[in-house]
Length: 170
Image (cartoon, rainbow, N blue to C red; front, side, top):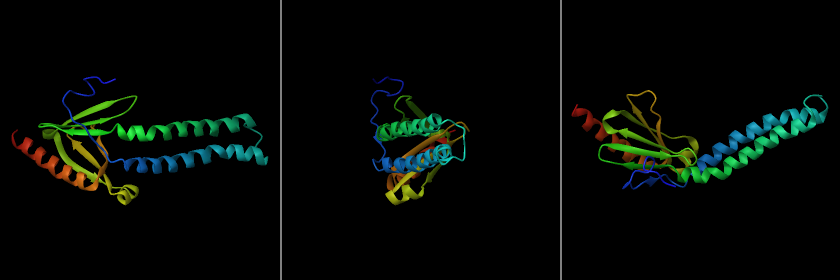
């Protein structure tokens, strides 16, 4: 179901690279392996006999529940990546994200203070980057992850030039 508030009519959304799924999967694997390992320590201690509390059923249920939650998040990752999009308009940049809780952010070019491109180790190996837009508002969190490096560089230059042109008119 599409609403005009989230999907304005006449907008052609550009999607991020499908390689970004790999970045998200690596983040998922690292975070969840650590969490499940830590939550399994009480189970190990109970089985070895070092601890008498928690009960065995609780020591099993906590890491099992975390595993189920982690697997649910794993299933959602490809869909979450496909939901990320952006569109360049004459006066602003639209950034869209979310499946259940959808969000469309409008960043006027004249409000941009600077445009930052960040690259982590996994992104670098896949030729991707994350574009960060900094505005006068401290609450603005305009991130556009999963862009091919060439597209990120092009957007950085183009958005910076448009921002300077809009500021010159003030």
